[in-house]
Structures are given as C-alpha cells and as structure tokens.
Image (cartoon, rainbow, N blue to C red; front, side, top):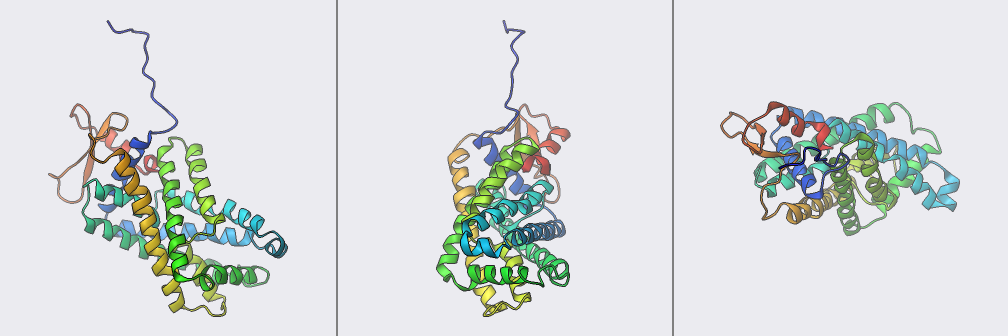
Amino acid sequence: MANPMLVHVTNISAYTPQETIELVSRSGARRANSRPDKVFLSAVSAGCLLGFGAAASLVVTTAPWLAENAPGVSRFLGATIFPVGVIMIALTGADLFTGGNMFTSAAFIQGRISIWKMLYHWSFCFFGNLAGALFVMAIIFGYGGVFDDDPYRANVIAFVTAIQIKPQWHQIFLRAIGCNWLVCLALYLGVQAKDLASKVIGMWFPIFCFVILGLDHVVANMFFIPLGIFLHTPGLDVGLYIWKGIIPVAIGNMLGGALFVGGYYWYMYLGFQEPVLVDGIGYEPLASRPGPVMTLKRWHGSSSASAGHDRDSPSTEV
C-alpha cells in the first residue's frame, strides 16, 4: 500500500545536465523550423542587443590610467558589463549566431533536423546579427557621436587595434574556439536554470571569462571592428576585417559551440540512450501536419497543448 504521506518533490532550481541538453536539442529543432523572416528579425534584435552591451563595455574601460598601469583591472570592468548584451538576448529569446551553433547542432546530431536546416539557421542568424550590429553601431553610436571625443575615441581605436591588427590569423582562430565554448556554456547554464535570477547568474560568469581573457566573438566583432573603421582606425579597412575579423572568428566560433558544447553534451547525455523526458514530457515531431511543426507528447501518449507550450516557449529555453 502506498504511503499517503509520501510526496514526490522535483528539483525546482535546475534541470539535470541530461535534461538540459535535451531542452537544447528541442530548442534547436524549433529554431531551425521557424519561418525565415522570424529567424532573421530575431537575429537582427540579437545583433542590436549585443551592440548595446559591447558599447557599454567600451565606455567602462575608458580609463587611460588603468589601461597604462593596471590593464587587468580595465579588462575586469569591461568583462563585468559585457554579459548584459548576451543575457538580454537569451532572456528575450533572440537568435544569436554563436548560440545557434550549439542549439541547432545538438538538434542535428539528435536527428531532429537536417544539416541544411542547421546551415539555413546559421546563415540567417549570421546576416541578421550583422545587420543589427551595424545598425546600432552606425545610427546610435556612430552618427549619434557617442565615441567621437577623446578619451572614448582613443580607447576604441586602441581596443580595435589590439584585437584586429596585432594578432595573427591562427591566433584569432584559436581564441574564437575558446570564446564560443564559453558563450555556449553560458547559454547551456541559462537553459539549465529554472528561475530568472539563476539564469542570469549562470550565464554571467562564462561570458565574463571570455571577455576578460580577450577571446574573439564574431558577433561582438560585428560591432567593435566596424566602429573602429567608422572612427578611422589606422591600418584597418573592410578587407582586413573580413579576413581577420570574420573568417577565422566565425569558423572558430562554430567549432567551439557545435563541437565542444553541443556535440560533447549530446554524446555524454543523449547519444546511444533511451529518449529523455523533461518534467515527464517527451519530444515528438508532428510529421503529419503541413509545414515545419513540432509538438511535445506526454509519456502516456496523450497530447497536451499546454505541455507543448511549456516546453517550447522561450522562457524555458534560456
């Protein structure tokens, strides 16, 4: 006879690592099956939001004495502020190219989307992020004159020179791998947490690490480097930006997110195992419906619209 006083209590603070990568995979399938116009506009929003965080980090690091005598402290200040942009992206459900490297790669490896769907999502996110970052850079901060005067202008030029002109191509590529390893880990931890405060804290520290270490993020570069070009940084032009600020960073970011986070956690927790339930709910695509639609199905086979909404909403993804 069952004990009537026994109450089953679930963990209300976080999902397990296995449940988290399952949610990442489900989210990747939903993102890759979204309408192209929505993916692009979501990516534009992400580019804009990251631009605001990047601009704030440039302002807070504008301290000539610190840059000269305590560069580590200056980096610490910038790394403390920059995560705001990524957190706003995650909490609003916007599509970041580098985050998509993890989400859709996990869905692809799990067999929920084709490689073409994954590449389609990456492409639309990349160009949407670029459009959003260029928009806020040019309209808000460029023509808005936020960085026109010294010491802010001099700080931007020095920063862009340090990340774009001085490093060699292979150094940028290797830094980019580490960067998106940490960015996607931040998003992974955001999915794992169940409450807002835990999501923010979980995402903050990996982003802090990549910024303070000086690693390269292709979407952040979409703001930083064009701003440097706008302010006439010596030796910097569009050709150099494409060669050293886009190509090696994009390739490195894709490897870091898809292999070291999406691929690794899939292999550890989803690969060659039974289907994973999250809060008692399994995943099932609706192949019978026209168009790229998916839903969620309860373990005993009864479909639930409310359950599908709970597991497929942006608030439960990140």
